[in-house]
Image 1: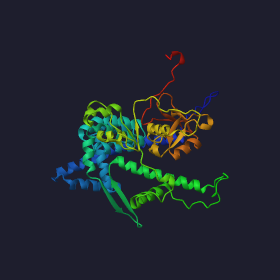
Image 2 (image 1 turned 90 degrees about the horizontal axis):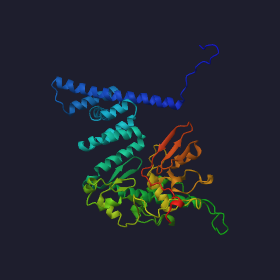
Image 3 (image 1 turned 60 degrees about the vertical axis):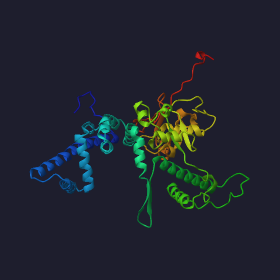
Image 4 (image 1 turned 120 degrees about the vertical axis):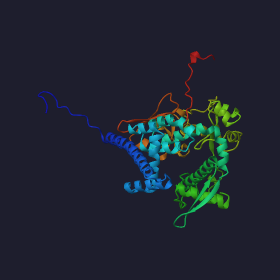
Length: 444
């Protein structure tokens, strides 16, 4: 009912996306209570078993899992995970449970936090809980997983050499039979080599795909003799090509069956080593001095002895100083569209991943995008370039989103959705922001 001469008040109506987020928050709050209730049920079952004189053994715990699985109509394995996570949140990570109850993190955040922290030694685990909760409240799930892995790896890097030495003894190759005449061939080996192998397979597969797509397009120049030739019968996906190259390399041992463009490709991995880290006697001494560990792109920290070998001039490794050096190529302005090789490497190294919100695709598999399009006057410069996976590259240009690089942040991107919501994506690493000196102030 409205008073004469006054407009009737109409409460604001939130749009569908706001309602989705609000509903999600309510579900998350109920999930926190769900974990508390599951743990209460576990404790009551244990108390009942003790009251009736049953020994608290694995049989009793199995019975609890069975009853929960039957009541919830889930598998015993899922029930076991639920009980384990509930017990951890209630008794070991109450701050994470409190955050979950207020919808400051999601259930996926909480489950991953429990799974990773429970793997650690109690002394290490207890020292990381506060930082882990803060990361969960700040980052989307994919970014949180990478950040928590990095946090754990950094804190455990002092003993990395010893643990790596013990783990490398267990390296092996396993064949697991599958259906339809197929099988999985798995290798447990050092992560550096694994990423290098996968990177080389991907590069060769892309070279084959590019060669065949180019061959399938008739050339227009007058000197071409095969412009009317039939296009090659090549419809394999990158995944299929990667698997075929893998077989060719291991069975035949060479790449002569592939186009010339694909034969000279070698593995390339980026290793970042702070200069002072190389001067440390050991990983424990480095950690005691507060120095960052050596890190391989896509892998994480590596033992100091291994880093020294990789920085000694081995082919195929991009060695990057974390301190800026004179002569770093940061821009070629409008002189060329395609960034030079070292600038492309620097853009990918800085971001480490696709720079779309929450995306986890490695930068090595992404396209280099001009944030301000080249045709709109954008420069080929570090402060106008970012790696985007093919899907998010398409969304940026055709999905109604607006993207800009935030000044003086060392590479952060701000994405604005068609509805006007803003999301800031931080790069994995910072590149120092350079400002031109004023001519009048320059000594020469």
